[in-house]
Structure formats: C-alpha cells, structure tokens
Length: 239
Image (tube, rainbow, N blue to C red; front, top):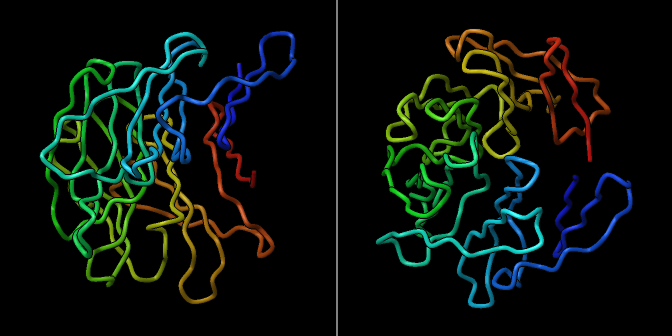
C-alpha cells in the first residue's frame, strides 16, 4: 500500500488502483508529514482550524485516523519539520516553542504508540530541524546553531532524552535541507550544500558520526530525497 498526502491521502491496494481516503477530521488546514510504520499503522501531523498542530494515528490502512494528545506545558507548540517512528510504538517529534530565536528546543517521545508522551528539553543552542532514528534508542538530527554560525549534526543514544552535537561546520549548509537516512546506528547520510559554490553533496558516515565524508552531486541535481540500500548503493533523486 502506498500513501500520498496533499490535503488528501491516496492509497493503492494490491490491485494497483488508486482511491481517495478521507482527510483526518481534525487536520483541516494542511499536513506536515505522514509516515507508515507497518502496512496498517501510520501517523500524520498537521495544523487544525485553530492553527494548533496535532498528530493522528491509524491502525486500519488510513481508513480512520484518531487524534493523539501530546501532554505539554508549552502553549500550542508547533511541531518541527520531522517526526520519526523507528517502531510502531516508539515515536519522536520536535516541538517549536514559538519564541525565536530559541525554537525547536523540545523533543517529545512516546513508547506506547502515542498514548502518552514525555518532553525532553535540549541544549538551547541547537535548533533541530530534521531527524532519523535507525533504532528505538539511537537517533540523529541536523539543524542550525541558534546564533547562525554553523550547521550541525546531533546524536542521541538514550531514546531522545539528551542530544550531543557530534559535528558542526560553516563550510556546508544542511540544517534545513539535510534530509537524513540511516540504515543502522553506524551508516547514514544527509544532503548538504557547499557554502562556497552552492553545489549539493551527499554527506555520509560509516562510523556512527565519528567522521563525515562529502560526495559532490552533478551540478544540475536538485534532489530532495535519498536512500541507502541494503547492497550499500545509494539512491538520490527528486520527487
């Protein structure tokens, strides 16, 4: 089954035919991201009619979505640019306090499919913008330092409770465009733009972020997604 989101979701069963699935009732203003962890279980977040951001869950192939309540002392937080669900029960999402420049300083995590959430405050200098969890306890994030001096990669090994900056540079920009993909805790990559010539690169690590290498892409490339295949080959393209 394949799903697309653009104020609707489209679904194709085994027949290959496409059909429309009704919008989640609460998310009437637009979708931020949708992900399916299994063939039947998926999550979606977006904005409501009151401009508040909420998340919903389906367990029946997207036929019905049920709202999830994220307990927080923050007033109407705006979710960050990415959520991650390494398993059907373990999920993560950034939260934006809405008070610049110290945005995206909270990570919400759940271990029971979104029934309850725990908020972890992170270093105020780290503005997280993209993340990927190859395992329930290990995650990576890219972002920009709040003073604008550099972009960074951060890592957590304790279920998102604490995040450590493992790499930062002003030679490449990847805070916003650095879509991440990891096949395991050690091997992963993200998109990065050379600050000198604006050429896009694939930044990759094979040692859990101890070091990163940069592979330039053709100058005409404008990719926005990437995948590290099981045979160690890469797919980089545009949707």
